[in-house]
Image (cartoon, rainbow, N blue to C red; front, side):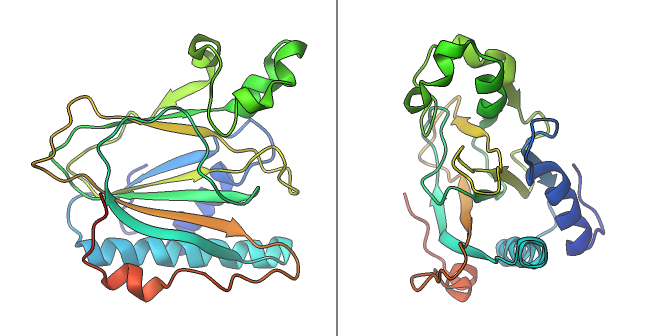
Length: 222
């Protein structure tokens, strides 16, 4: 979805409708294309503002805020399998892609729908499905979506429901994987990565990463 002159509130509403799911009717992820006319700082500020707007929703709806599990920037140029990132059972992954000359492809797989529609003997084989998919990948093929609008020249955010089947809100996550057709370590592919957890009742996050550090850092992890 191209984002132009939309408020954070409007963007958050779209994210909630498409990502905060308890069934497999909606995709469990959304791609937001912000175009070229941003700076890295302004882009990261949008990510922080979006997280905070989503937290207002969870606080109002579930009486639970969203909290950072991690906030990192890295040069990501390795292929990954389909997986969930390590986080709470109810969690969301926000990936902020800065313009790059390195081509990449992002795929999402609806593992919850795959389990629901699989034969009974596959349903009990959860450890081969999450957090890393280890079954025959051809079985997952009908449930895979490629982010077709992914453009390396633009700033873009992909928000992904990263929840496991143990989510107490019955949030249904999706697996994700990245493919780099041609690695080029002389160039950078900067990804700003947030994992945001839904806090349990009475729980606190004493080790929460600092937003200001994320916004002001010039460090890019490898």
